[in-house]
Image (cartoon, rainbow, N blue to C red; front, side, top):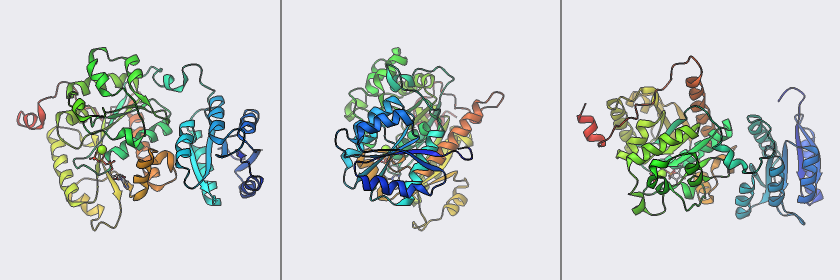
Length: 425
Ligand SMILES: Nc1ncnc2c1ncn2[C@@H]1O[C@H](COP(=O)(O)OP(=O)(O)OP(=O)(O)O)[C@@H](O)[C@H]1O
Ligand SMILES: [Mg+2]
């Protein structure tokens, strides 16, 4: 924001006292200006068109046209407007629907002044990272994602040699964070083809999954990818795992390689939720990755597996910069200190993601990633910082004249399982 420029806010609520209270709360904030007030959804749609606010504070339950329908209509006319939904506790189904309509953030009534200021500034900042756009033409935003030409995408594998440390949760939130940060073409792949979790974490249903791509591996092109990948409300495209494990078995490491190869041509960033194993499918992803976000927790058995994985990564000749060590559920209540771990494994922990305790589980149960449901949460900020780190390096690598910071390992034809690959050396 340049000096003197203000965040232009519209308040929409059918209760006059609520409108007035919100306006009073915002009155003394130098960088915020209330430019319009509406008492129902229909009025809001008309006033948004006339005044083009940056941020809209939107009540859900209103007569005539409710906040969800109004959000949908306003987002269609101006997709860059930031809508913050105001609801009362317990309206979880409404929240999900509001998110699908395009809302960026939620505030639960009664709203504290602090939360109000923080949310307005946060969504405004988010919008500032994207150009102000006009309404999408026929075909909509989903088809636009796969529409741009460009250089090859970066594959970011989120991986841990130990299950249950948060790989799927971090992968899903990271993909959303990269999309929010860059507005680029971002895909998320569930490489856990046997027990995939992304459908639950993102509350996404689709009758098309990785199976449809594996069956037509010789025809992988933009149209086929567009047809099979599900579109999440955050505008990331998601390749889901099949609902039944038996069908997942049909997907081989060769299929995974071919699919990622095709996706690199169509996306700028491909985040992969990678299974916690050294099976061929995982190795295919790790080999092809530009970077491996290696998740660990401060638990003895996880640290031991991390140590083993780092040794394997060396044996596989992954460059050290490719393997990025990230501490998840970081807390000082585990009895193990991060700096002691660094000394023990002789590796730096690049980033830390805090312990969201029950908030992460809550977000999974709701099917709303923390990056969307609670974007100001410290853990959402940590994942945002990780997204920044990954995209800065990717940009530097792509800059003309810059040597590749992390050369993707030769994705050629490395096959045959971990054991046979290591003894061949
Ligand atoms: N930063 C965090 N803070 C608190 N809890 C977290 C965090 N990250 C993940 N969790 C929790 O850890 C649990 C496991 O998460 P998740 O399913 O993402 O792990 P995973 O490594 O993908 O597991 P699996 O090996 O079963 O695939 C979930 O209950 C999730 O809510
Ligand atoms: Mg998982």
